[in-house]
Length: 609
Image 1 (cartoon, rainbow, N blue to C red):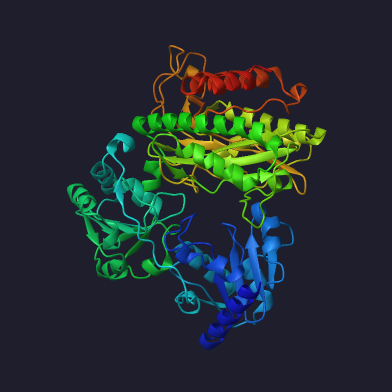
Image 2: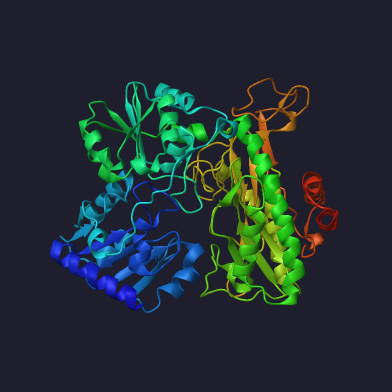
């Protein structure tokens, strides 16, 4: 609390000197990442709130922080006595940032933000909103460069090549596809996910995500990676040269953009405003790269399957160990998270975890994105529910899985919630749908049984997952979500299914698998399944099938769900049959990789219900 108070004092002194009435700090960096380097965690530094999503707004006399439902409980605790007011997003009565500023800043006042960590779209939107209230916007100041005296440096991990044996396509081939899409324009790519995929490069600049701080410009004639030179070993520089990619210093990006005579395509919601304003002929347009990387090629799909099996082995060992050791006493949320990470790291090609494990016991399970810390860690007892949402990074794939473990006696409500979430997971996870269907249209399948009980959850039900990239890939495109997402789900796409129920002060339940969109069994005229490809099936459709072809999901995740909490009379016969087939598949896929002890345990927990 005292640190936050002191930092607010320093920020306000700078604001007074610069003639600024309010300063907005988002949870972003110059590359619009979800997981950002320590250098750009300014919102955390100024507010003390450690959640991944939030916006800090500081005036000369007040401060407020906006965050979403995942962090309401956490934010309320961390903002206590700091001078910040918590603003709960999407809750009736909560003002937007501009509405709040209109109340607390006099007309004619100046609001500022840093153009390096705000997108073109965000700056334009905020400028227009503020203008309606008679307020002006500055986007040319970074106060943290001055007041954050021990600010971390830009990360300097070494870049390495993600071989074609995992990527399935060379960088030069991907660049050629991009050139075909942009014609005689240049393309500025500031989004690290897109750069890593295009160049088949990985590094360790970003926690949990194998990206590297950089920019990429592709023109009809050349491609240039802007990166600090000490990050690029000689063999990687040689590799890039062979793929037709040159190197320039990271800080040269603005000068080179200013000198570029070609029209430069930028995606407004993934390009920081500081680079955009340096371009002479900007063309605001959606980048072609996300639409390319969302379709996984056969090599990548094979890698996912291998990675999921390895991850399933680690999860089975952890589940068995946890259920046997919690009753002995002494285990905590952090110790269980450490055990799971250690078991993952034993697996071949494991490079670490894909995000901080969400290990929520009892009431902590109701905090959707709860990450245990030494301050919040609690003992896990042989009673109630434990929610674990975690994943691994493997050279051949990224995993994301949630399971909820019953540790002992459960209330009737806990068992009901466990079963309702299972029904949503089953009904969305076994969906069959025609071409043109998007994730918003399918999202209801995960929620409809909960709605009958007056229960809902506010987070999305599914997102893309990268291939040794980001665990939240293409987050603006294909999703399961109540909010409209028009991108249709097509074969070759990866997406999670993760409904949940959260009872504050009591428990949380979530089940999650990562899935591949595939052609449905009746897509072909012979009635046989068509092999998953990176493109939709456009061949003949079986007689009598209308408005096809049809698609469904292959569950890439192979991990059992503990059946003891299930209220089986709440399941339909169809749901029960599908679930039993899933559990059998888990046993069939994982048992060859397990010793006799773990194989016998898995056999017991996957018995049909």
